[in-house]
Image (cartoon, rainbow, N blue to C red):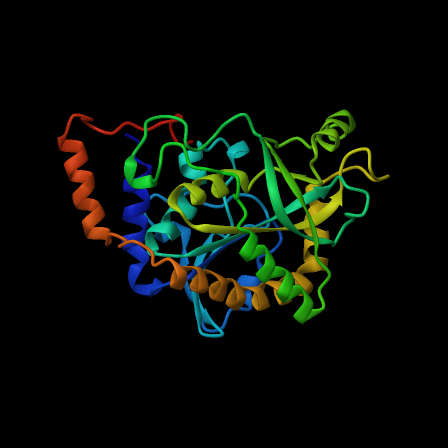
Length: 317
């Protein structure tokens, strides 16, 4: 058994009072933190005050968990993520998403900065993710299985919920923020891809490429949360443009797109909440155990045949 559920449970318990009952969770990617700064009267909890949360060390990631009410919808926003390429194992990379799941979110919107592979995807373009290709060489579900995390073999045929995508497209129409669609490929990084690798990704069917998101999406799908993804295209992928790639360019382009991104996301959140509410009215969700009930299950598992849990994937740096 892995310790990741215990760590997420402890993190969720520490922020439960500030959280309230969040319906929609958001993970903000590189340079997209302006959305967090625009939240109305947020409760702000730095990652340094949350048990087991690692510090956000990459530029453009504030390292804060914020709770706010937006148009009547309670939201939980992870402003900043940690990455596999920083040396963290995937238990740690997915800890934020799993913490939001324990807090009770029904939908998760993951965002990222990505390189545009498809010719029409240039800097500043926003793209709703329809599917992904995991080329990171790792999977967050590998290793010992804790049944409290969800099924051992979750179905990923609808990793990005079509109803949530439709809600985001409706937000695009209402705000007049142009939105493309495409497949996101995840690589481990941190070096940017070579032109040959981009040609390979193009032939595989990828429209954009980045170094995050997929582990969180897999973990969220395992827990049964509905997922949507939005990429901010920060640059043309290697071999597609004339400039050399740099993180500074990524930050500059995401900041330029920030106003449109924030406008789209703010309009999308209540529509996403309504989409999951309609689904739950048709098929009522099963009872979700409280934090204390899940702790009790953990104690039973430890006392059973599984013995003492062990961490999968190596130690934290």
